[in-house]
Length: 317
Image (spheres, helix red, strand yellow):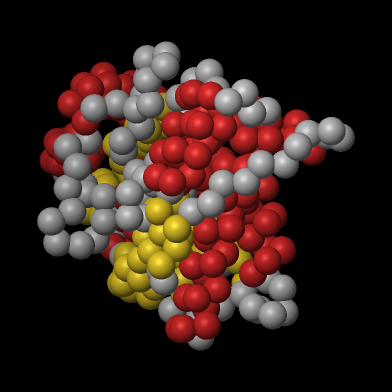
């Protein structure tokens, strides 16, 4: 028995197939094309690209796994498991999923993009929580701090806080595109930041506003733009962006750990693939003064993917 999962997010089209055992037997994804110099895509344009790309990914999946083995189809049909959560891009996964399930005569199961991220993170980290845990969903479209409890086929999620303006991924992409990097700029900015570790590079800093569980990245974006216009070293600025995100999360998560008493923290989303942010958070939050236990998906499974969607479909089935 196998379950096929589909996720059509803001910038990634992905398909995955998992067995009843939880083993992933097929996973593929493709970034949507973003014109050079642009900082993102309009939803209508993203929908158009999904309509072109998803059939190709599905053909590849069925060439890998015979359709007769598919016993259920799961789709991420909205961003989050809350009332009113909606983005046009997810209608592609929903529509194609319904058609395929009807053609294959198998159950059609719905979940959300955020729950898929959490499920993929737990699977990749090899961790099965026994009680409530904290989670950070950190990407170009979401920057939220969550209190999470596992339930059959998904999660009960309470949002503690999050960004008041720009998402962490938007900060990375805005600065990266200004530096001349293609979108998404995360991997390029991370490589540039490593050059700041060399001798003679003057350290730069960006400051964010943190209020309880909420934070703001619009200030750091403006600061970075001014520094770049003034001729600041690009490697130092790239490292400052990483440091700003890590410092912001550290402050919020310290508060969350002390307020809730929950010390297990899962961090998912494309920005969570950054190795410097990971190491910095581990160093600061796993210190005995805080005593947190951090879990990350592997870098390749941190960004948008359909693996978690398929896994949740398996659980629902």
